[in-house]
Length: 459
Ligand code: FAD
Ligand code: 8R5
Image 1 (cartoon, rainbow, N blue to C red):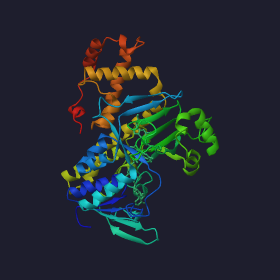
Image 2: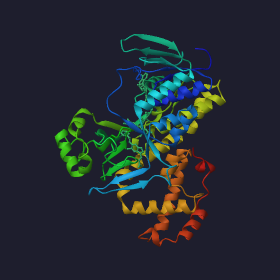
Image 3: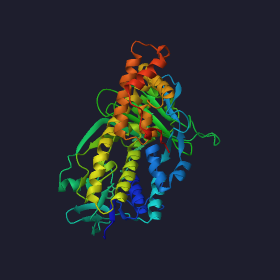
Image 4: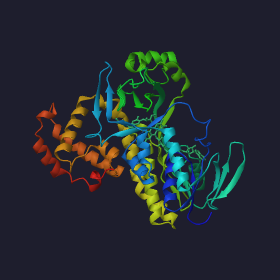
């Protein structure tokens, strides 16, 4: 490979994104993907799995020119629809209005669109070419296809976007230890489905434009809408320990009994419940931390390969897309010094990856427990009021993460400072109505500096 050639391992969401952006900036990019081309007939079908797309992901998609096409196929989610055990539900909006919403998109559809875009930009994607080994000092990759054929190629500059189980990461670690630490959450997940309703003019069985949550303390169900009227439902539950856990719920019949007592309204909408339960494995959840993401200017990890996180903030793909956009900007500014680019990427991006990893863990507790807690709701209400009265100084953390490009690290730290203040303001108050809001705004302005300009630069 001549100079300015880059090899990308993995043509998943982040690999396709970085390949597109780098090709658009004049690099020659070759992508090596283990699986076959998902756009070829015969590989389609199966269940619809969806993802929540938010501002950080959209921002990268805008840079590729794909945003409008993706949004056309997406379902808007205005907020959390919280379903209590008695069967009542209520919407907690994510933002002030429909300019602050998240989008449910089909993973398969998005991946195919991104592969088309990478190729249209001029990248070459080699399918059925799994990374099987690497000689990083020589700048060579060993690739293997499903029929066992092996070949070796020149790849002086390698970007690893091969996901949480990254083969490139293992090769890099063999070369020089990366300081890998994997923290299992101890909870797993099971995917289920609410099919479209019988009436074709109103196919959605529950509110279409929401992310549904059934919080139950130590566990929960969620549902994201699909275009054709179905919902992908996910149960999150401890793996072991006392009932209920995946250990104590053995088999589909026991699971149905559990749902009949805990999620009767959701169960009533899932005619295929026992089949789905039996057919789908329990997914595992973990956070991946590394001390190092690159080896000189030879190889760099991005996306889940560098920082897989738990799903509870809906930011895995969004963060990976933001990685790709930041990396492409760094490369464009310094095309002939990959070592400097990789070092700069790690230095700016790692604190942010650590911050979203932590916020994602925290959001599990918020979703499964706090959304139904009066103290939490009071804090949230006062926060919303402060944003309305003093938008220059207060922005809820969820909105910084989901609707702005403020660094994740900033969102974490600012969120902590805002939280301390709101708790102080609520001391001794049973309801937000009794808080002197003018005095609260003065305290806010006296305690915290104004938000940076990026907080108001959305879209
Ligand atoms: P992947 O998408 O895992 O892609 C890795 C690619 O590398 C794959 O194509 C794989 O085949 C290929 N590969 C693997 N090994 C090799 C090899 N040896 N050689 C060559 N290629 C290889 N994120 C959100 O932002 N919002 C959500 O709502 C959301 N929901 C999710 C729901 C589910 C069920 C799951 C599992 C994840 C969800 N995520 C979500 C997280 C998101 O899917 C990931 O963060 C994102 O896909 C990471 O992209 P990636 O390209 O780094 O990795
Ligand atoms: N990932 C999501 C949110 C935050 C919603 C909120 C949460 C399923 C395996 Cl659990 C989860 C969110 O705070 O109100 N936005 O987007 C996506 C989520 O889970 C995805 C669908 C998932 C991995 C299974």
